[in-house]
Length: 380
Image 1 (cartoon, one colour):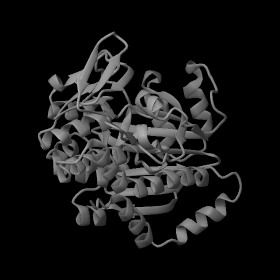
Image 2: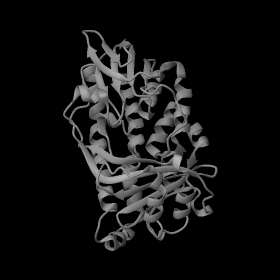
Image 3: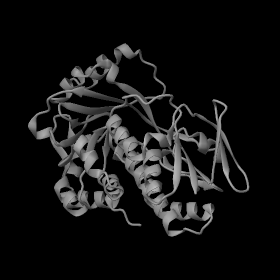
Image 4: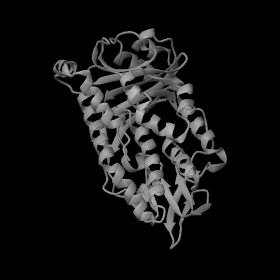
């Protein structure tokens, strides 16, 4: 059996590794012409780390990243609103959250898969199904044929646009900057991820390596605000000038070329992720805002559940395998998409921030951990 995977990000590479484990041969087709060391950081949550462990390389990811011991939401003075000790999570599941540079994670995935299984410079033009196969046509004029095709090509998926062209994007009302800098965090923050909430702005940060800090900053904003890139640092400095140390210092030390800006979109959960020999996974199937840090985690879970769906249905046709996969994943993913949107709205409320913070502080830590366990459990 052979498969085509469109998209060489976390979803596509992890899926190829997972299918390789059960002897299904796949080739990953990625639009970019070369792999560059770019991008910011990412938090690979406990659910994702469990999948990486089952696939045999979680320890390698932890060795190249920063396993976290604490997750906290704070106010602008870094006074805790809600926190979670990840040691309890680690004891139960074997892993906490690992913060890592995206480029390092991609390199680990590529090494595990084998670069010979990845074709670069292959932007999808269209695909077609025949009686016994599916054929992908690429913008460079080439094509590839296999038994099935997996669309792992992100929120703006060309595979999804052909399968389900009427999906409408939802703007979150927020725009996001991300960056990586060299910075010595105070000892109390070196194994923690901190998200601090202000007046319709917030900023999160954590170490992702030795003296390497990843951060994101979010502001309530209309979409498509085209501010001169040279003014980004001044704008961010002004937004967070009254926040407690080390936030202003983290922003000040970040080279401008290390900062990226994106408006935050998702789309309403779609009722079907597959058609015939073609199936969507990751953001192509269920794009979500990053407010729960679960975009990558849910993509990795998809890879594992797709592998299991092939494994337990060895004689089924592809529509049945893909329907089984979606049935196992849909309820959890839908809840995370919706909850993530709600958290973003809550973090950016215009009025009542003091009441919100007071109510959050009243929540027992055990309840917060229970909510996280609902996300971190992987029940096939």
